[in-house]
Figure 1 (cartoon, rainbow, N blue to C red):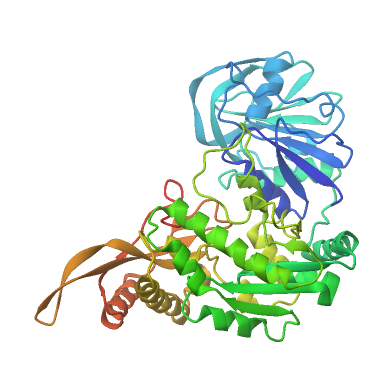
Figure 2: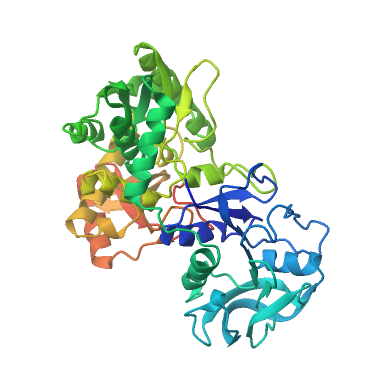
Length: 508
């Protein structure tokens, strides 16, 4: 990629938002931990320092090596970054006298290119407990709020800028304009990161990397693996071998439906029904992490068996996307495992395949835009994300064929209902969860004691955060009645109104 922007992450919850705002400007960027700088910085046209939960005054302050950046590459320091430059380059940072969290307005803005087309009293988002009392050496004040005098500054003689607010957050109404001013007008970065440019560059890169060797790719029917397959097919054609494994935990009729969907796309796809192998491996397992690991192990075994049937396959294609990559690295070393990720973690030693990941630097919405530029069917590109372990992590407790069948029926009623009512495309991800409890009910004149299912529908951009969707009560009532009347064994339906965080999208 040309004209890279490097974002140094100091552990802020907003770091990915910075990347998203930069990408929205058609500018390529990547996130790296503050303590993992590239050896060669010549490719980078600008650097952005993120915020952080740490204080620059504490013993735990995070110290980046700015020796090859400050004064040499245009730099925008956000929040923690701004305080770091002040504290360690001749200024003073102290605990804030007033609460500096939430909305504020810039009541003073200097005439500077950083604030070009940013109006007086522009709303910004503050989120810090320390504040800059004295600017660093050679600094010039650029903006203030009523409570924060040193809200923005620059270093004379350098293209070094610093702001105490968060331009990446939605509440900073002119934040994108400020980022554009810095990246385009100050750093001179070109806005040339478009889907067509990505396809052209990626296909050429894949041809150079793979040559005439063979690639085997696991297709899931989802957006990521499909777009990865079409990109690889465009690059190497008949040397791409796609395998779609039925683990017995897919949605109702999904195995055949997905195979049918790939017909006419020019992909070489083989369907493998390994339901029995997965069910045997899952027998008696209740712990979510054990279920995930069992599914991952059997998938690799099945996939390895199939890959061995392809003579001289040397590459494994994966639909890994950027959030998968970001979640697998951490500013302070490996983060606590919330749950294993099925796309990151490498391969067992016995699989002698090199990995190729054409989408590893894209967010989900970018993958969809690339897919559209490749001419992929909009219905396929609009599919909701579906977890790699499938319905196994939507069945709480142990897995049986009967539980899978029951949940498939419930899920099908819910998803079809969303489509029929024009709600499917307004939802990021939806599904049903089979709970490990029975509840008392009445059907006719008889008492029942049957299963409870929960429905889940969330809105999100990339799955990193998510809000529950306010589905119409009339719709929920209709779906609940259909499920209870048509799915034998279910007598109660509940709706999950938890957001991520603190909850996760999936229950396991």
